[in-house]
Length: 395
Image (tube, rainbow, N blue to C red; front, side, top):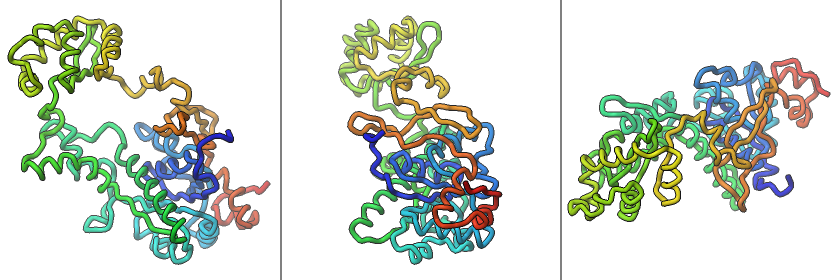
């Protein structure tokens, strides 16, 4: 569509990444209109073959990208990569520093060779004592205290998604956009390094700052000290769970009236917010009993109308039947190379009241664009086959 918001149209991004952090970074740029060329080994990115909880990794974070295979263990493959980088605005990688140095692809080398290239390196750690360590989402959650804050005491627990990897990819894209903006002023490329550990550190910063100011540690979230009178999960009639919050004195009054708990409103022990918070031990069972007497659908309708924060407790699979998710543009339909379709969310923002969608959200077959992209660089059929490590037929 001609009126789509694609501010990065005309930008060429070469991505050499795997798993989630790096691929999500490239996907974000692609959704904004950039041409993203994913460089894969001849056998394809190993993330394509993950099963179990890893099954959704590749199809979620590689939508809309072109696929080019290069054998970077041979001179022809390295030479083709350099030909490609000659035409690129951005290079995204998440390899170990030592591996890049061995291949002659260290950021300082690339910046010297391609002065206008933005090199985005997505790593476990920024420069420092830990920079050579291997990191995973779960590793940094354990290191920073995120897992400690998520599970009950003595049972550190990772959060239920690859949130650090995804947010790390987002910061990678954020850094790239900043470097591109700066390039308009100085005409120079820049090296952007994004750390998974540092990303997670930012996510727990509120707990760090509380300790730095007050000198006491926050307990894990399941045992947290509440700042609100009602902020809990209850069961409705029939056993369906629902989260309900009352975070202001006005919401306390509204919720009490909605649940016919007028006695709480007149109770002299509950006449200010701190008193209501301190009384949670004996007031919550009263709220729980009142909620248990209400039908689920009737209650959520009443809560919504009254402006009370609430949420049904859902599983991710239930999002496919959620009316807000199912609104126009809420889910994007993609095609796998074998023909199967699937639905996944896009970017979580609108521009001019329109959701942002890239030119494509499909998954390319391994090497599907090799002949086209490398042919566009001037390589002939034999050179393309040597560089790609696969038998390529140039149309």
